[in-house]
Image (tube, rainbow, N blue to C red):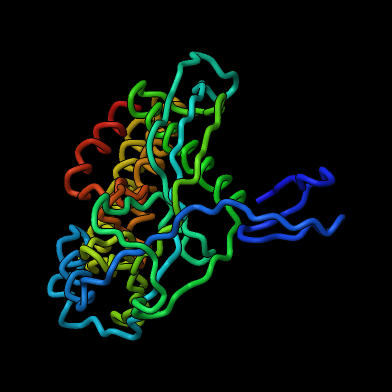
Length: 315
């Protein structure tokens, strides 16, 4: 973080403890946030992970029978815990922004102090059970801070901006939303060392990564295989929609070019989501937040009638 020397007034970067001004040599002690840790409770993270993967609607049946663990490593990950008081303004539109409304965020937010755990930004830590940090009680690999407090604040603000954007899109049913942050108050409350299991496993020809909470067994992030049956079903649906659009287009060829082009264009547009799902190898899911691609995982048989209806409406 950036501090100002109380002796000469120069500004420089420092992390805490006793620091020496590089300009005048004056030494001062910075007040540091208290550091805490959570004791490890989950000893069998694979059981928690495979139970979570098994209940995903698009994962293969009996996935645990063919999945093979490659690595299973326990890390104590340092998290910055901030309290944020943010007010913003949301506007919507693509060509010109309009309809400004006020959006707010008053809550705690966490940011990993290491670079490799970006999937854990804003991971909700338990409110009870923390203890004062004791290096001697750490089991597994203790990770040291790689990200400064100022860098973590920037990451937190960007995450809050995304959350407010999603909230505005959902609440006001807007599209093309842009959020500007008007007031930005982020206070560092503490640094928490938290046990996270990192697991890599193999299914078929592909490798998947997942994190398991070492305190209560939650799944912050997991990659998992997608059922071949669901992928084939999506591919079949995409093919049917394209063929349907071509047939309808030919049927209306005699009355002009607009109707055939409209029907075929709509069918291609409608088939794209199913085709994209059919080509996807890995699914992603989280127990504490809804990932974008998981939100999009509607059962293809449920959306077939809706898409076909859109094709018919265009002709």
